[in-house]
Every structure is written in structure tokens, then in C-alpha cells.
Image 1 (cartoon, rainbow, N blue to C red):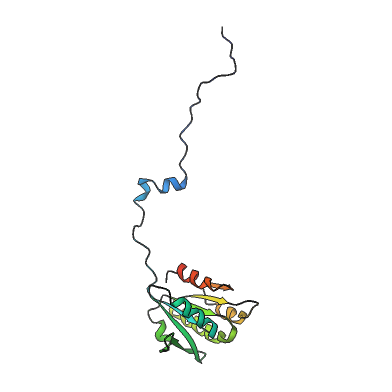
Image 2 (tube, rainbow, N blue to C red):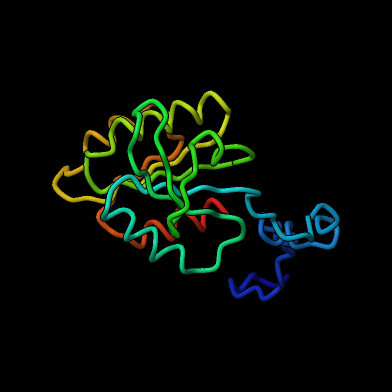
Length: 174
């Protein structure tokens, strides 16, 4: 009778490893559920700068290629119905600018446009337009603008970095 030596070299059968979620997602079976068309950009985005520094940022950002974005400066006027101007100086009433708009991004660097931010946000909410606010400032220069936008903006980003404007617009696919 032979004794066991303790060095058994018989291979142990192993089950095939389970596929990870990533591996399954790239399988031929799952590929039939993929959407092959690129995601369409927003049909009509409007970017409204509320103060002089925000207008300078908007001009810089507007120089880049965007799908259907239009850029405006808030000129003031009635706080309930502010007057906007395209960056080339052509006046445009808020209600006209918002017609057919899908998303509005409000830029602020200080509190001077608080009432206008609130009017724009309220009008967008009434029309079912998604509103995003980007407040560029340090040391709470624009805390009143943040407070004015908070009830209306789905996205509200206080930031000190102007590059966040580009990132937000890219994320919103404008």
C-alpha cells in the first residue's frame, strides 16, 4: 500500500471566473442595447452675465465654439423684467431671450445683480427652463447673488476659478 507523500500535483478543477460588470457590458450580447448616435447638445442655451467682471468672463468663454449658446450681459432696467444685451450690444428683452430656451446659465462675480438674478431665475422657473448659476468670487463677494439664485438654480456653483464656466457649459452640453 502506498503512502501519501503530501506533494500531490493533481490539478484542482476551477470554475471559470465570473465576468465583471465591465466585461459583461462590452459583450456582443449587451452591445445591442448601446446607443450609437452622439448625445445631442442642448437646443438653445443662454448665458447671462450680471456684472462687468462676469461680462468679461462671458466674452472670453463666448469666443470658443458652442453649439447653440447665446451670450448676454444684463444691462439693468426694471428688476422684475431686466434688459439684456447680446455681447455685440444689441438689446434683447428677457422674455424674448428665453423663448425656445432649454437652459440658462447665470454668471455673477459680485452682488450688484442680485435682483436681476432673482428675476431671471423666477422667469425661468415659470417657463420650466433649467437654470444654473455660477458665481465667481472669493471671500463671499457674491453671497447675495448666491442667495438670490439658490431657490431657482438646479446647479449652483460658487467658485473662484473661471475655468469652471467652461466646465459647466461643457457638462450641460451647450
